[in-house]
Amino acid sequence: MNAPATFIQSYIDDLNDALNQLKPGAALTRIQAAWLGTCLTGILLMNSVCWAKFERASLGDCKVAALSWVFRKASIPWEWLLRVSVVLILKRYGITEGVLAFDESDRARSKSTKRIY
Image (cartoon, rainbow, N blue to C red; front, side, top):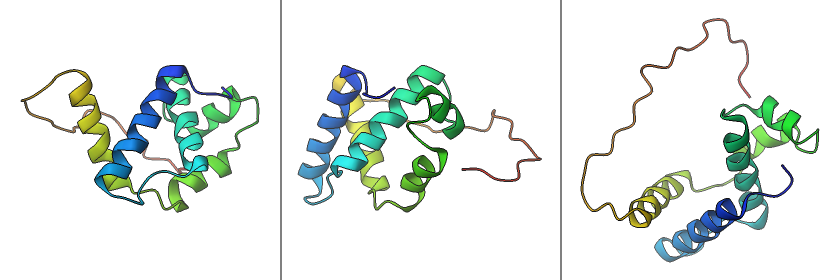
């Protein structure tokens, strides 16, 4: 899990270019892009969004604290990242009309979670 898959790296490069075009100066830094590549690769390999699983898959190279810190503290333009991601995916698949909805209501959440990283 040291380097992202080629298609993930290509997606991040396209994302960064689109971010810079939409809002100059909003492009991801080298470290942020590497972190995003690690996260997307982890999601692909683990079929989960779990920092602890990412750490285990990286054989300890990526620590839980470091992964979660970037997510919480880095000045990543999340609202622009979401917008550009959706636009890129729609363009890539030629989707010109439809309804986009986000729904996680069917996902049960643990009532005993003490801490989420």
